[in-house]
Structures are given as structure tokens and as C-alpha cells.
Length: 251
Image 1 (tube, rainbow, N blue to C red):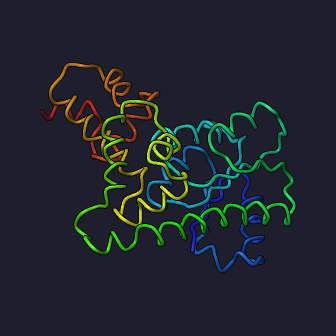
Image 2 (image 1 turned 90 degrees about the vertical axis):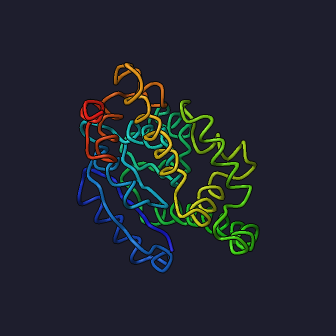
Image 3 (image 1 turned 60 degrees about the vertical axis):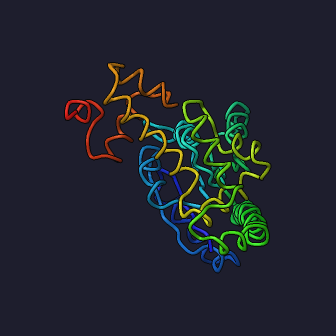
């Protein structure tokens, strides 16, 4: 059962896509459907909801869909993503594919086209889950308190490369898995998503730098792999309850 997140600033569009799913054969495979109306809301929603599939509009006010997706990929979000846009522009499509988007739908999206695209995403996840249980479940059960070597390798890679602009594809290539297999395997074995583990490593290092150095917030942001200082500050405050400067002042 998979979690689906619909992101579009038009409520009618979100309602239509949700209805398409509920009427389709995929209704039994999608356990939860939640919605966002903006890119900013998407960034806040993902860590808590942890969607398996995101259907994302590009053209939204303030933070557009692709910019929001870049920020999510920056910190390891491995969800399957389908773009839904009113603009059939080649530049958008190229950027979307670079961010690992599996399909690019042009509005108005027909019901059959949408369900076919969503079914493709579900199929990819099912294949990934099948490999996960076949290859790794026995090892995890044998020693529940110790992660399998394959997952320790993921952790080591993140801990050694968190300061870079690493994405899920980079980790998957290094460890020899598909991005979808890696994402679900890591969550099944560790209880964490790759996304949350990378974020945890970065926040831990940020705290160390805030306490032990005089680096500026901008420098610390870049040091731990964030390209946007304001985004780093927002994430840090959400994780710790304090802004980076307030955290530093407390120490």
C-alpha cells in the first residue's frame, strides 16, 4: 500500500486527480492520498507524510514545483514523481528528467493517461519492494539490532558525502541498487527514510559547527550541503525548535 501526495494550487485539479484514483483499480494499492497547494507546503509536508508517489504541478505561485523538487532531492527525498503541467515546454521536461521524474503529463490530464502514469509508478515501487523482501528481510530478522552491511554502506556514504549535493541516485549507484529499491529497503530495515537520515546527519554537523566555529550561517549552510541559506534556517528551526543563531547563542 502506497502513499500519494497531490500538489497543485488548483483545488479542482486536486479533487479530479483524487477522484480518478478512487475510481480506478489502483484504489486498493494507494493507502493514503493527501494534498498540498504550493511548493512551500510540499517541502513542509514531505518529512511527515513521507509519500511514495508525488504528482506535482510546475506552475505554482512563489516556489514552483521544480524548485521545490530540487530542494527535496537535495536532502534525499526518493519519492516517485510525476509532473502535471499546463505547459509543454522542453526545458521543463529536461529539468524534470534530471530530477528523476518518471512522467510528464500536460494539462488537462485525461483520466486514462493519469492512471496509466500512476500505475507505472506503482509498478516500479512493487518491483522494488519485491526485491527488498527477497534479498534483505532474512538478514534484517537475523539481527534486528544491527543493520545489514548493505545498509551500513548507505550510512557510511551519507556520512562521508553529506556536504556535497548528493541525491538518491548517487547513493543508489554507489551501493549497486535502483533508487526505488534502495529507498524502500533502507526504510524497511532501519525505520528511517534515506531522506530523514541524510537530514539527521546534516543537522548534527550543523550543530557542531554552530557550537565550535565562528562560521557564518551562510557558510555553515554551504558546508553541510544546502544551496539556500534561508531554506537551511527553516529546516534547522523545524528540527530543533531554534533558529541557527538562537542555537549558537545558547552555547
